[in-house]
Length: 61
Image 1 (spheres, rainbow, N blue to C red):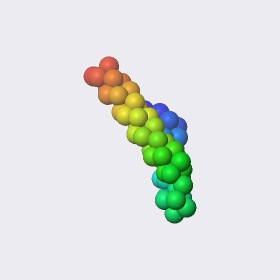
Image 2: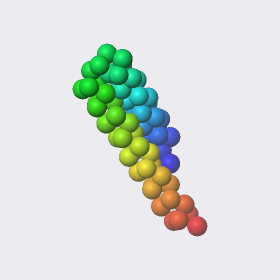
Image 3: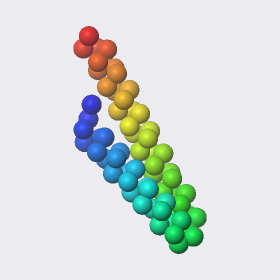
């Protein structure tokens, strides 16, 4: 597990949530969509780290 990669993914998720919220407040659909996209990217990064963890655990057993 890469703690650094997970931290980056979490930061990307927070950034996306903020951007989406700002977009909702201002009525800017571009910011809303970009914010949601960043959140999806963060979920994918977390999932990739989960897969890496599972592979490492399987090898270590």
